[in-house]
View (cartoon, rainbow over the protein chains, first blue to last red):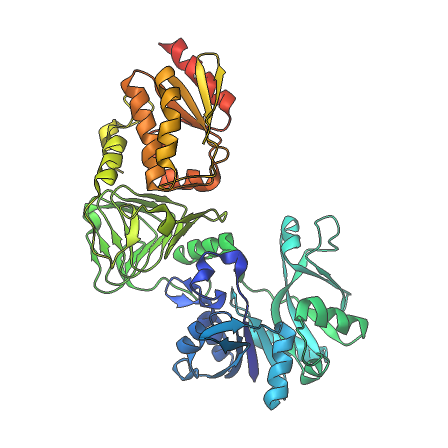
Length: 401
Length: 117
């Protein structure tokens, strides 16, 4: 069986994380989201996988290459051009991607699975395909229920008693929504569907192709197959997925690494003495990291490979990406630190490069600089702090846990 | 950078005018805030317009607190935007300053302190 993973989006609602990586490559602890999908397909014997790429295509293509490492065959349909040494993204839409590949080689010559590359799922594809075949559907969509107050983020799908789709509502208001069953971006298509996609234009599956199929009374079915659907639409979704993964709540994903103690895992070559710091599980520490004595790490927290957490630092319910130095006076709470940015689940961003606070957060590979006199003054003033009882703890201990 | 200073009782509420307080404008800030800090011992900085602060800006605000504390007074903050609040918490400055949602709350907190003394 064949599949396509749609991986050409820009992930604008997951910025600033997607400044550095395309959404399908966002890591869930130690593997990209898209790897979860590739392995899922492989486990269902779907071993010929096309991927459309555009934004930061190289990140995807160099990681998966021809798929051999994952026991599958993969190839890419790049939607863009190279101009003056720079890549210009030219995405053609989710349906346009299918049409482009079809026109190139006729790849879709049998039933195929279509997956959006930005959700962690554990769906039983065999069951989905079985339902698709039972209904003799031309296209089948895996459906899921969402809370009513969240329907505006999704495509609501209305079906009849037989499961046949009669209407789509793309991101309706809560008042207008005719239900809470939504399109999960997981499809089974017959090749005839692709013939209905116009050539040479940007075309979207959910917003354009499906409504067209409904109008043409094509057999389009919704399948309510129960599965865990962790869609990474925005920053808060990603934060939630990592928290869940650390708590062992993501099906099929166990926290990697060596179990240091109950609920604390570490990669190789980690300098960490749990008896010297305050660590509250679940916590994962990536390879070669340094966790200095006297720091506090409260889980669920992920410390990426190569990080340095200095003595006195406080980290709680956070995600710290690779090679970050968290300074002795830092307090990182409900935050993700990713390269040059700190972002909280609500999307509030601190631009670390512009903020010039490298004694608080820096790249662990930069040699540690001596504090400038201005920074020393700043820290002294912080130390002296307030003389009155505003602080629960004596002001001397402002850096203690 | 003209400082907008409003007196509410004994408290001087200064609304910082710029969207940013950083290395590019802190000299100007320090010059312009000097008189307000000398003439008042109870000061509130209203930061509603402030969207970005860098380490120099943090240092400048902290220096104002220190100056007022040394003179027996105090500096409180209000209307802190989300990105600035996030930065304060990251560097632990939020544990040094009392931060209020509104200037009225900040001003009233001075009276509350007086009552307990």
